[in-house]
Image 1 (tube, rainbow, N blue to C red):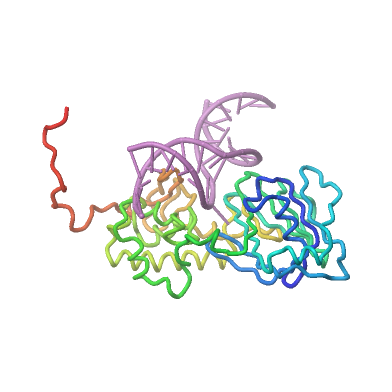
Image 2: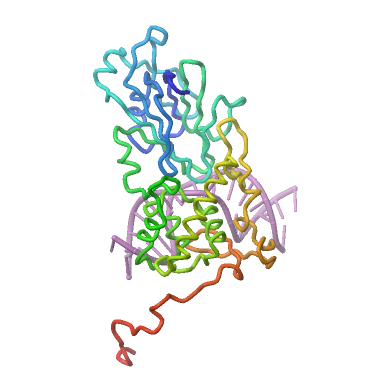
Length: 309
DNA sequence: CCCGGAACCTGAAGGC
DNA sequence: TGCCTTCAGGTTCCGG
């Protein structure tokens, strides 16, 4: 897709466009080339050029249609479009639980949300049966990703950074790992896998991890994510790659989605529980819940004795 | 600011 | 077979 121009945009489900309006989305996208493809956390980022005037695609169009595509509406002249448009823009996509980006799908898949047609004949289709996935078109990426925590695979995500981010947190470590503003990009199954690898109970208070456990967790996150990327993701349910292939990371999972199966470490059955409304898999024997270190004998800040009915 | 729970959605799988 | 319940690769809003 790199270097190719978007010549036509079709929106089948207005709900999939978070920003701006559907009309503006189509209008602003048409005529721009895809300059780079990057990622921040779980957000996929298409950096776009300024609108290009080209003899080969004189009728660049933007189209907002629902159900069956209608005949496209031409967007003025390209000169006008360029004059009224932002110079560069970013198309951002989030797949949420069930979204997919499909390149040149063989048959028209169900649940189509947005179709981008390129000047080389390629078609990029954004699909999502569950209607959670979203797209944005923004000048500044930070308007969407600005609050995200550090990238867990970047060099500046050190054990010390993790310790700083967990300090003082009273929520379960599982919940904190899923908080994208603490660390960006860890999903439910990778949180479970990381906690198992570090032998930490999902309900352990995040701020109570010892320095040693924090270092182990840091290493575990790195290992789990690197392995999963090497396996092209996990396709337990919906996820498929742009060519329709499935990932294989779930075959290597130790606990995630393996309730009742033997723990690979101790052979006792893996349990499932719910933490913050998310299914959570762990080994109760290998991942022990420990009381807070140091604070066990401390008195509470106030003692209300017999004062209330 | 931090925390927990509900809401947003719909298809697929499992139990009866 | 059919109905009902549960679950799901996530984020955001609301109330405490």
